[in-house]
Every structure is written in structure tokens, then in C-alpha cells.
Amino acid sequence: MPPSRAGYVPVGEGVRAALPGEQRTGTPDPNERVQVSVILRRATPIEVPGLPAWPMRREQFAARHGARAEDIDQVRQFAEVNGLTIVSADPVRRTVLIEGTLGAMTEALATSVANASYQGASFRALTEPVHVPAQLSDVVLGVFGLDTRPAAAPRSVLLRPEAARSSFSPLDLVQLYGFPPDFNGSGQTIAIIELGGGFRTGDLDTYFTGLGLATPSVQAVSVDGATNSPTGDPSSADGEVVLDIEVAGAIAPGASIQVYFAPNSFQGFIDAVSTAVLATDQPSCVSISWGNAESGWDSSSRTSMNSFLQDAAALGVTVCVAAGDNGSSDGVGDNRQHADFPASSPFALGCGGTTLDSADAVHIDSEVVWNDDTGATGGGVSDAFPLPDWQTGSGVPATVNPGNFQGRGVPDVAGDASPHTGYKIRVDGSDQVAGGTSAVAPLWAGLIARMNQYLGVGGLGFLNAVLYSDPQSQRTFNDITSGNNGSYAAAVSWDPCTGWGSPNGDALLQILSIWNFAQWQTGSLHCRDENRAEPPSRACRGL
Image (cartoon, rainbow, N blue to C red):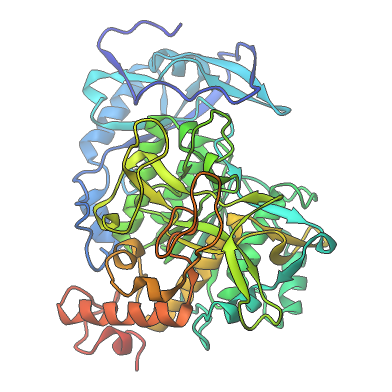
């Protein structure tokens, strides 16, 4: 049982449930040194759904929506009173990093932990909620680092080339999906979140040379001590890392790619996203190919992650997130249907999967919902987030779970995901074919980088508000009307398997160009670096 503290309140509701097959193995050493990330509230709320038609600059955002100095001071005082040390305090990321012994930390936070193991890995698991003094209850959104259980799994599936029915290079999909020609993402930055594994430069050089492309600029960024650490096993997280880099890099070879490596824990995942979204050299889009069923997140971790995705939307950073590879149940064996998070966040562009067939890699012969012996696209209705205003009227059904909650529908968009019609990649010295919705997130990130370059804007940002409000949206996609992912079926227009469908790049760019110009006409859109009198589609591109 945790230490008893009068005047303390829990952070969030309950603790994360044990993983299936998780074993408790004893009591951790109380003298072990640990670091925890304390996530704080914003100085002022971000208005929703009234996100700005044009995103705020980072400096403006930090001044309005970073952490309050007095909130940081309260956390500092709390640490000092309890014999803990402040390692860093980042008001922009609203994150205070605190260090101390495990015993002092659990005493200060009125909680308890146990050693545990799962699938051969050892970690710490919270056995009671984290608590803070009542005066901090409105200040602290979450405290992460005591529980080090895996937070998410990669949404990718690899096959040997001979096992696939067909396969495509990302350049084939550029052609099939009509991505804007003559643009390569130059001037854009794509951030990729990884929770394990790594890449080898030699593999990237071999791969891009084979495509007739120069190897793009790829930089590894360390978060919470994690590094680019390839294992040498393509079926490990290496396959995920390389799939993300090679797909995004081939589609937008002119873009700078920053790969954020973090430990696979709630602390690592949340810190990686906040670090990427709020980086000084801010990306225009983020690709996330890791996730977990909403039920696998406790309320404080989900709230904290969602807050940084909302930051991204306000800053004009599009966050593309894989919707899952285990159908409408998301692999949870409780006879209920589950959406995958963070794809189910109302501030994410949820990316579902299709099976795509093309005999000539020029024209699409057929495209259906991905559901075969290798997996099935995630998708469905959130149990955690209500239906957003911008999704009203798009045909999102109530969840099929008891209670029929009217929640956020997932995904928003889709793309080729079946490993049987997958992506050619090079990983750990071998050629593989990869699939899963993991491939769709970097596919869309590369497309968005191309469109950002063409439109001449710092970032299209929160695309959902545009895609769901424009009456022409259905025409900008290849509508997928055949197949199911378990409890949900494809349908004309939006559906909870493939969203609006796979991209029709030229048509999507046309709609976004019209929207871009309309925002300029109303005075709510301007170039990121300076205001000009000409339309942004010309002026921001220097035309």
C-alpha cells in the first residue's frame, strides 16, 4: 500500500491495467535513482474547436500556452521539501524533470511500485495511483517514469519478398496516388517517433541509390537517454524504424528527417512527442507508427499525450498516426471493439489501411479494406473522446460496444497497408516487404511535406477541420467501399475502416489550394516568415 498522506489527491483515474501475462517478480531497490517527468497545465487554454485558421508562431504559442512560472515554482518547492532534485524545467513543453531515489520518489508521490516481467522484459509497474498535494491537483496533468512497462507496439508487419503477392516502392505509390509532381518536400522537416530499434546508414544509402535518389538528411535525436540502436534483426523494431524513414524519405527526399528515439514507456512516448512538436526547429509534420488500444492507457497518460497533440494542431504541425493492425478489436481479447491511441486523438490524422492491387504500378486496379491473414486495419469509434464538432455529419456511427457511445471516428484517411501488397524496404542488410498502418503514417507525412512545399506554407497543420468541412472532400480521395475490419464495414464516403479513403493527391492539393487562398482573402492566413500582399500560394513560394 502507498504511504498515507492527508491532503493528497490522485493524478488521473486509477492506474494502468496489468499487461496480459504480466508477472510480478518482487520489490524494486528503493535506493535506485530514477527520473520522472511532471507534465503541467497550460498558462491559458487553447480554444477548441476554434483553432486558428493559421497557426501561431512558436514564440507566441510559448508565451500564451506554455507552463506558468508559478506552477513550475510550486513543483520545485514540492521537490525540495521531499528531498528530490529538479533536473530541468521546460516551460514550453510544460515538463519538469525530477530526480531522486525510488524510495523518496514513491514516498513523495504517495504511491507504490513492483518489479514485473512481460515477454522476457523486466520493468517497474505502478501498483497504486500517483498522488500529489491538493494544491497541485489542478496544476499537474501527469507524472511519468515510475511505471516503465511498454507503452505501445509498432504497427508494422514484415514478409520475405517471395511471400508477398506483389510489392511497391514508395515511388510507385507516388504515381498511383497522384502525389504532386516536381515537388520533393524541400524546406520541410518530418519528425518520426520511434520507441526502439534503429537504422544503419549503409542500408539507407543502398535503398535510396536503388531508387535513383540521394539519401535524404536523416538525424537521430535522443530522448530520455534512448539512442539509434539497431539490433540486426529485421523483425525487431528495426523494421519499423527503417520502414518509416524509407517511406517518408522516398516520397519527400528533399525534406529533413528527424528520428526521435525514446524508451518504450509512457514517459518516453509522451516526452518524444512533446520534444518533437515543440522543437526549436519545429517540424511541419510528425509520423507516429506506434500505438496501443485506448484501454491500455490510463487517464492521465492519455490526457497528457492528447494535450501535446493539441499543441501540434495549434502550431500548424500535422501529426499522422497509424490506426492499428489488429482490426476493430485492436487485439484486445475482451469481446469489445477498441480504437487505437494516439490515432483516436481528435488532434491526430488517423491513418487506416487498404489492400491495393495494380498490375502496372500506374493505375489502381482495385483497393479494398486491409483484412487478411497478416492482420487488418484498425478503426472504429473512440470510447475516450466524444465526437468532435468537425466530424458531425460525416456518418460516424455510435460504437457497437455496450452504451453505444457517440465518439470520435477513426481513421480519417488511408493508404496501402497489406504486407501482401506492401512496401519494398531495406533493413539490416536484407530486402523485405513491409505493411501495416505503420506504412500509411509516413506515406501521408511525405505527401503533406510535398503539399506544404507546393503551397508555400509552414505547415497545413490541423487537416481534419478542412477535410471534414469541405463538401468536395469525398472527391479528393479514392473512396474504399468494399471490405471490413471486423465489426465495421466500408461504405460510400467516410467509414470507420478507411476514413475518407486513400489519397488522390492532385485533387486533394486543389482543394487545399482553394482553402489556402480563401484564408488569405479573409486576412487569417499569411506566410510564416512575413506578411505579404499577394496570395500565399504565390507569394510564400516566391512566385
